[in-house]
Length: 122
Image (cartoon, rainbow, N blue to C red; front, side, top):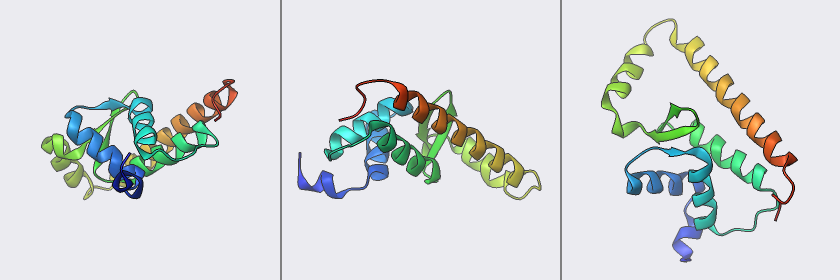
């Protein structure tokens, strides 16, 4: 583990991982790889995963592909153009809010499920 990896943020590592693989990844797989590369002590795996998932969700370089899969916006210029165009319409704020609420619910469900599993804490 290099010191450079420890200094890079989790969301930046996730971005680099997706760039390197060149395809979307299931969020648990992506975040687990980020946490392994980061190499910091984790008191609660569920909490650490929810933190990184939130960072990815809030970073505009990432796009939720559905069913827990995350990719990069730069891979799909059509989606980027459609997203930019939809920001000008009145429906964009409600669409964005409902997407955010759905993702937040997914995070909460994963957090509760992970917290209930024995042996998940280090």
